[in-house]
Length: 79
Image (cartoon, rainbow, N blue to C red; front, top):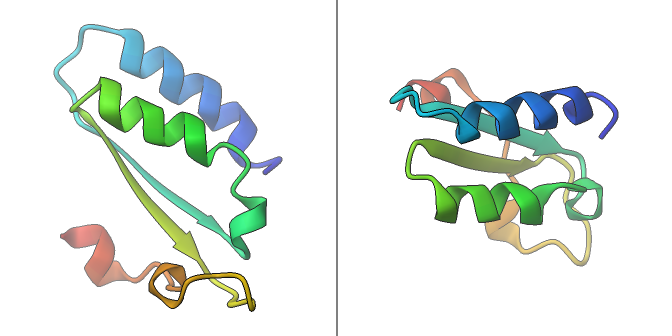
């Protein structure tokens, strides 16, 4: 979460601008509980069609739905 905090401000600022640039965030955390800003980023995807969010959970736990447990790969980024 400490690493994404500065990017959170940058993303919110970029989304507010009138640019037509597409924004992609690949948001990865070891567990679902560590996705501190997930709700805020999900709201941005609903408010701005230029903002695209892909979430990843890299360490499975008993409370994590299996569909959420995945790793970032070059193929996922290039889609």
